[in-house]
Image (cartoon, rainbow, N blue to C red; front, side):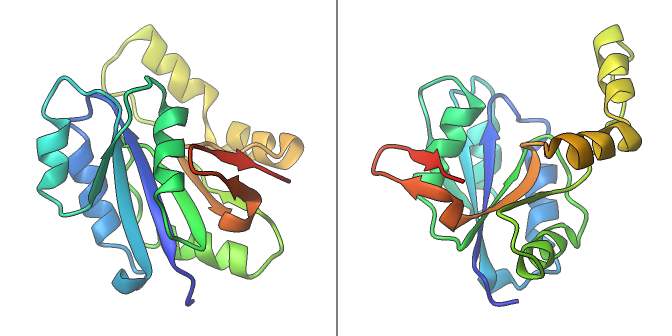
Length: 172
C-alpha cells in the first residue's frame, strides 16, 4: 500500500465528538506518512475548532452551511490519490483506512464504503428510527442493490473527480 490518502471530516458543532474521531484516525494501521487528515469547520458555535487544533491536523473553514460544501472545500485542498470521508461523530476501527485502500487497490471500482453501526445515545424516536433504518442487513441491501454507500464512511479515487479551483465535480 503506497497510495497517499486524504481523510476529510466535515464538522459543525462537533465539540463532543471530534476528539474521539481524530484519535481513532490517528491510530490507524495504515502508514502514518501515507495519509493526511483535513477537518472542515462549517461555522461551529461551540469549541469544535479548539478541539480540532489539539490534534495537529489540517483545519479549513467553509462558510456555506452544508456538509457537501465542507467536503468540497477539503477536496480542492487535498493531495491524496484517494479521498476518504468520515463524519465527525464516527469512530473508525483501527483497520478502517487500510481496508478501504485495499478494496480500491484490489479492484477497479471508483468508490468503496463500509458499514456504519449506530447506537442510540439519547432514547428519542428519531434516534431509534435512525438505528432501526440502518441495520447492517439494510445497509448491505442499499450497497448491493442500489450501489449506494454512506458519505460518512467511504473512499473515492481522486481520478473520479474533475477538480477545478473552486469545486470538485464527480465524473463517472
